[in-house]
Length: 162
Image 1 (spheres, rainbow, N blue to C red):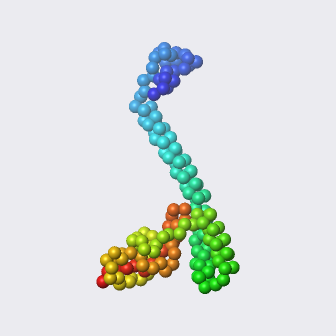
Image 2: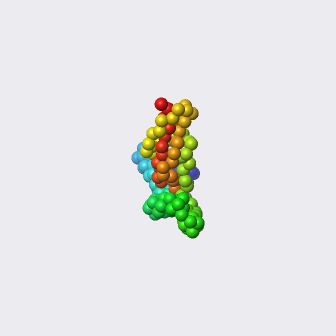
Image 3: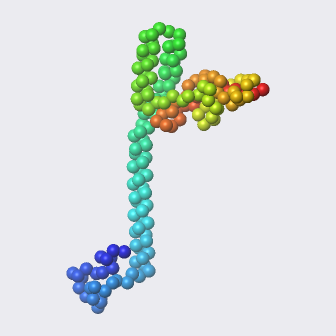
């Protein structure tokens, strides 16, 4: 406890018969009030930190829903690029680049071990090779993260040993 809490200020003089330099003995009630004060102060500091973190998170992920709504358009562009001319490919590249600048990150699924946290198994495929057991053999629909958070799982075909 700091010195100013233990001593009465000089301007109060000798109001209770003690000299101004004698330490004030803290009663149990005062200690309870001090404890409540310190707990309230700690709670308030934790509240401020939590609110600041929530504010930063909401700012960082403000575009999440908008990007999620654009994913079907991106899927359509990808399909069109596979069967069409280069003009659509240019539009696709611009659109995809814009989404990446906002925080969209593609998930790598093909030839990786199936992970139910980021993959959604649509189909199982019998495989002869034991090395392909539990491995993604085909990506049906690409999955995406948004600034590190899963936005959409990849829809995949998984190899299963016979």
